[in-house]
Image 1: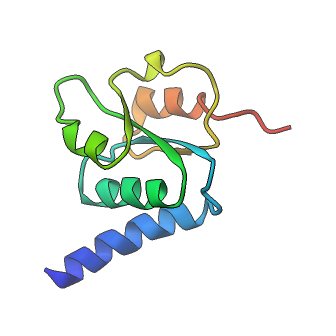
Image 2: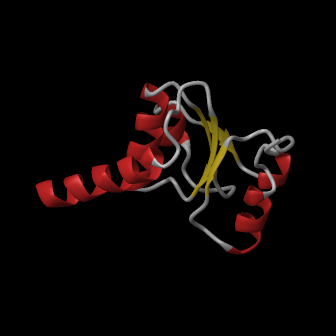
Length: 106
């Protein structure tokens, strides 16, 4: 059990380390309903990031909201390209749509 918990924590930390510093940054994340995603949400919130979790309609989202994530049930309903970081782990059309939500770099 402890090894699994360590792997979950390490996975979430490694993803967020590439985006450091997180304070004040906006993150869009897909596929974060499981263990790594839940830890990722908590770490992002603790570090001062705003995180929006994209989930399919009908999937449980209460646990993600309770951890501090904003919930989007439709990627197309997420307004504009205003995210500093996109963490996408679903692929397909959702992945393409998520990538278009990145804030343009100048």
